[in-house]
Image (cartoon, rainbow over all chains, first blue to last red; front, side):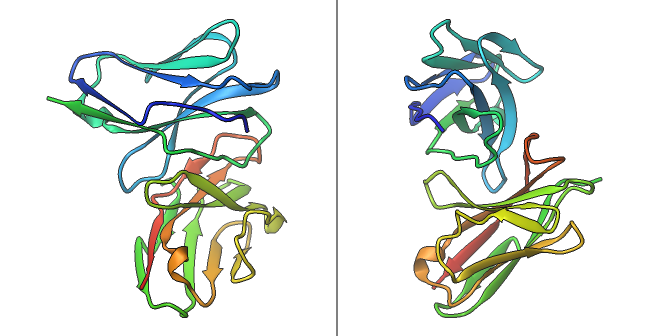
Length: 110
Length: 113
């Protein structure tokens, strides 16, 4: 898995958009970018995955520039329940050994 | 139709004792994974099952750790002669097949005194 760097923490307020950028300078051609969310006392949950350009689902959007050396997870109009740790993973789709770093702790305040 | 379940949710044990952690995967999922997450740290892969076989045990930290899976369903992770450094949250995940999205259980918080 390629090494990733993301901020330790981010604060936001309800209704705002939260953007978390992940750096992955050594991303390989076959690597995908995947984001997970983890609430306290729960296991991680898959949010979104992409290879290039933009991916959007009902939860978030993932923006990937042409050089793929970084990516940005965008959470629209966050609520208090979006307070969680968000992990960025970069790796081959066939790599089942998930490996998370410390992640980004997002705290949403009223 | 529930998700992955794990038991117990919390386990406190004394150094040197053996512990067993249980995982019930989502019904029909053939692949099962065990991970460890230490306080403030990331996720560490331990072992992977495809059916009842464990083709990849590369993440087990020592020979005190073992795991089995029976009937292609329930899995048990056993830690013998526990040490304080074994304290962590042990997470289990399952997926339809090996390369599909993994669904995680809530974890077992193990504290070794």
